[in-house]
Image 1 (cartoon, rainbow, N blue to C red):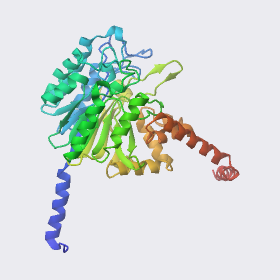
Image 2 (tube, helix red, strand yellow):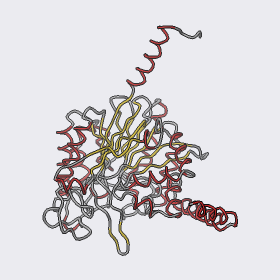
Image 3 (cartoon, rainbow, N blue to C red):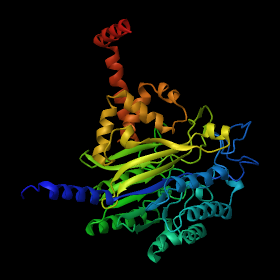
Image 4 (cartoon, helix red, strand yellow):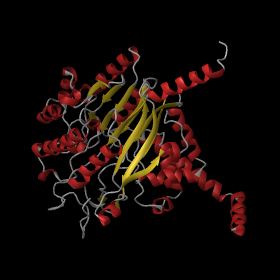
Length: 454
């Protein structure tokens, strides 16, 4: 076709650009509110002594209502006109089961559900349950249950379809199409969690794997693009080096997803309480599907004998995406500086970063993430930036400076190694290679010259 010149060509270019922009939309991804109703009384979620209670919470505790409500209001203030909200669970606090019951958990989810509906009237919320939303915590059953039924009723305005309501009542999973035509598959990966004692000896809890394969096969046949959401992600959580899903379930889940990388645009998870992404490779080890773990709203940090988690700030995430393909284009990560907000008695939700600017990416496709992961292998400053964002800017340079060669290997291997044995082998290989290089005579001479030049 002959090139179009003059004003007609300019109009054509403007039309194409305009059409492309028209296909861009936004949605919020929020996760892990962990609302603690006892923050101002018994403080049952707190993992350490809190001499002074901040009005927005404390790094050792789950969220008081003021933080939960403020985060929702901040979302509406920043961008109210969104296509939908993705909410990936864990609304109930880290409180011992003896202080909880089904009614209490349901009431916690109800008040947050109501707050979201009030702040975003008419906006669909694609919600999934977290492991702490269940009672007893983590113990999701594979049969019909009153808590499945009650939660389905709570979210009926968002799920709507009778068939999908029935799926939720069976196991808290469902699928639905957005008004823009993308297929959302909302999963209950809590069924595969290593802490769920009810599913340990099963091969397909609640039939979710068979159902997922059926939905993906139909979506492919219908030419649909898919977004997958769930609370607990597959793969290895870093820097904790924990595979959340039981080995057999993690492997089966990953294998199934790899069969449909051509239609899955992206996957969104919570649970980690940290900011991160992964890249699921196709079977041929080429870029497949981007995975995003949103940081939590709660600032709660774990504490176990001899070890505690890093401090991290409360966070909310705005995702820019292509409405036609589902491809994620950018992440606008917002956070509250908890220390400053408590000090000033006023919240300060501000932008932490945009991926387009922070990592120099035009989009967040699998190919783009693959490129930035490869750059991080040689560009220390780029990986440092990722590590800084992992705790939502709570620890500043401390986190980066405390990350040694093995720590960096853990982050790098965590991007693409989805099973623990492969991940461990990758870490050992990287650490061994680094040690070999540093111990060589050439490396010693280079370091000596560098020292002399400093």
